[in-house]
Image 1 (spheres, rainbow, N blue to C red):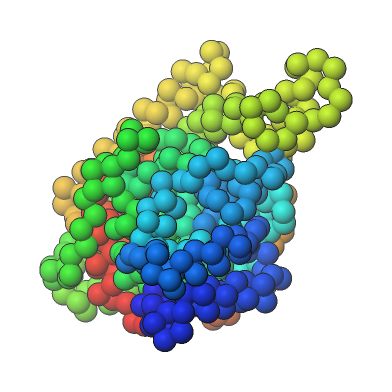
Image 2: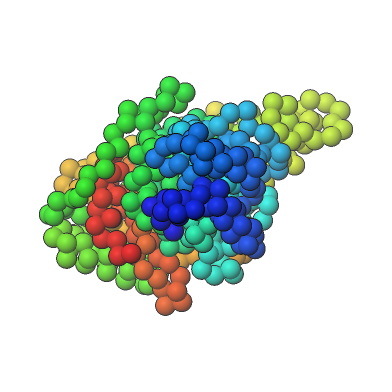
Length: 460
Ligand code: GLN
């Protein structure tokens, strides 16, 4: 289901009919556990206002779903945690406000790993989301709910956050288009913070054109997020042939599913058929990117999550006798195991005795990784590779071993650490009919170009 198809339906019937149909479909698909809440009352009020001509805009009446770490009206913002259960947002995220200003209608909030820590939604306090293609497999994550909602055609677009792959990997696992833009493209204001130096906001859509539409509405400077860039998001109509594309060698090793590698090679061939050149390139620092990520990101998490103390926000444990006990028990009950693991790792690598050995070293290594990317972009227009080493794995397969789970992130964290735009587009399916995505990574602010190139290869 695409935005323009939905706009046709609105013209032929009404915004109310379209929004009601989306909500009905969401309810029919409850078994996927992709939604944590519906914002039904508010959505129908807004649909009526569209039908009465009181709300207008580029997306008037078009329904969408936001990941439940975006502050939005009409339902609580839980970040899939017990800590924020029942938390009513006092304001809306800038991204949501901008879409609403164009008449789009939020119908619900999607499931994620609690506080976006994870890659399968199995860390959600409300149970995992099931894959749109196979209910025994994970949706991917952390924006798994959003990816499944788009894949099931409940709404034409959903929003996600991507700190280390959380839009791209679930998009790949569910056969839809996911974009993690250049760091600073879309305001993070009103989105529950995970790791502030890599958090980004993007969309999950069923085709590339819809990603272009949604991203160009959300992008731009916001005074409430001082890291936002002035709007650069101009979508070119086409990409000239003759682009120099690097196929990342380190992502095509034996450790990666052969079916995944085959699809990436086929995608490379279709790029060549369009008149581009594709050559193997090497980025040796990739070997360290997971280690860098799993030091810097927990460090930032431990700082960002310090605000959940049982007093300022959310859950408070009953019956504590001292302040320390109140903090300790509220945090112990309110956070999931993975949240606590990251808070502990983060506090450890930032502690005075270990700061130089871990955190500072990781920041230096991050700088080297960025340098290698820059060197490659002096010679190549963009890079391609897989999104993940496997297709969607089975529910429960990686839950007992956090390292195994982290290894799934090896191909998505490098672009996050370097702040680069990266998109995941469908590249076909495996023999068992599980979707496989290809990742396109470009230099900063090449987002629109990546999308235009992907659009020129789109088959549906
Ligand atoms: N899977 C990665 C992690 O667990 C990415 C999460 C994200 O992008 N929010 O950190």
